[in-house]
Length: 279
Image (cartoon, rainbow, N blue to C red; front, top):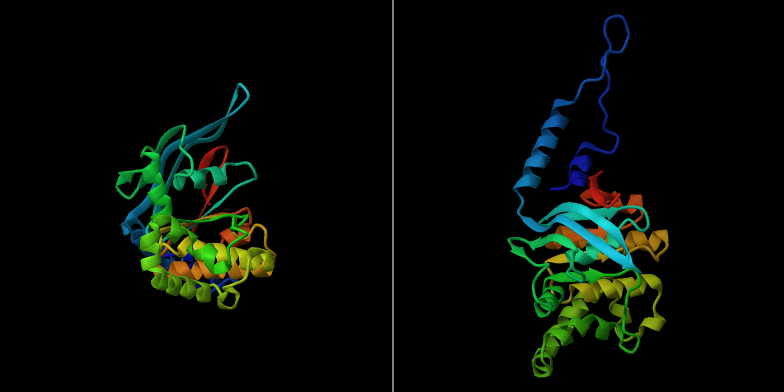
């Protein structure tokens, strides 16, 4: 599915060695037929995978006083099921704006957002709330944990919102079991009762990841998930995302300013001058 898988099969140091003619001089390097076939197969597999989420000719403008400021200018983007896509770009390029539009946190000035075969940018606010609570999981750079709740309480918060009081209490044991499994997945089983102020930055982001997954979303939207973390902790967070993508076929769209982090995704696009450019 991913270019990473193809590259790992060939090995990181794979290269085409120029052949020497009888005179000892090197002839021009020729393309490797096997590599060309792999690329064609990879492209064919990608194109046969159903489209999960897409942006069609998206524009977004903001107003500063009386002045209209364009941020996105006709963005077209397709994300396929099970894909791990990274979006890079300079500060202020509109990366987070695009992610918020994909997740229906905001509405485009023009253009359309589609979830599979349904347009979702123009649905009523209540339906958007349902989409965000059940189909989209969201991770933010600044965690947004509730300080008065424990780690487990923060993880279970979306379930409290999605259910009536009676419905939540009736399923509380199952919900806690699910929360415990997720905290074990992100390595926080020993922090269940701790409050956010007792956690490190990496632990708070792990809590936010577990919270984003508690409703078993189809798509995970991650806005600079490693932005406030040191390199080692950021790498650990990225490994968790890769594991989720591989094991659960979870579609992930990640915004990042770090090219090294972005390079770990299946595919990377760059926002430039308000439009998307393939990398």
